[in-house]
Image (cartoon, rainbow, N blue to C red):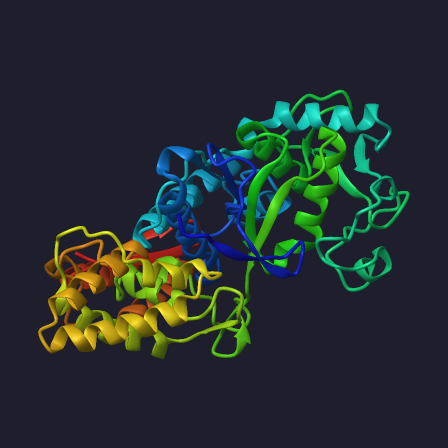
Length: 449
């Protein structure tokens, strides 16, 4: 068995991945908070940690790997978003969860063993919170339960900062009820009309961090091998998970290894709706095959920043079209030389460079290169369709994307002005041009017929 090396955030160095038990390898990935459509920044961890899962399956066997990715379906952001849209919270979370699962399929991500929802595991969160109170590691104030950070001596170890540094400029919730600014909420009272569950501290709902700790313990045990997520989750989310889990479980660790992917920007700027550069995964489906998006993510090393732009997609579209001229439906095992590149902390840029080399050799009639190209691409989640299927996404309308989106904007303006006759005419014009539209939440989505 070839050894996997990963950069362990906890140790701040590259280490050999040696699981606690080769008979059961546990992997937990922080999944989506389902308050809005997943964006291209969310696609990066989906694709990166899907590749990690594929490598673990290769090294240890599918039946030996337990991959858990949660769904956060109760959170302040969800409550706020449902209120803005004036829809029921359950309707919002179901819509976004369905879109998320469709996005995963589009990006050719394997389905985890478990995808638990926070709302289905409230009792486990209450139990863990009660445990921390009994141990006098958590305290109750006005129906709120807080974790006492001073009770955990290693707090700040994952982020490699002392507590004073963590307070400054961090995502720490401010509350006069806390004994210490770094103390974090395990349980909070629900306001009127907010989702609530009965607890020993009154009707309320869990804090964000306790959700992952409770679900990780339920599906992976008190200690497991690998915890993954974006860099933005190191503090406070992962730091708090470690503190509460170790204290509640009387364990030495939560996860032995921690992997974090780097940030994503769009044309050099942080992605935000105010900047007008907010790109959802759904935005890409009409014009780009999911394999193109996947290759575009894997072209940059997962720990490095990734700047997203249309040029990357267009370039990788042409690259994949070229590679597909050597597509074969046969399934061969990836060769060790190529696999070893990935095993070195997921060195996908070097891996892709080698595929370019195989493509050039295949053009000279080298059949071994053709086989190696196919097996390598299939291993990283590409070549999951025939050449005909890959090339099937073609323009099927007389309108270009700009014209389509302009008509949609005009229709939305007409609806806002209650000119429904004009709005219906624009919808019909779009349909006559081969475009179907759907209004979901406060957005209009379109696709080719």
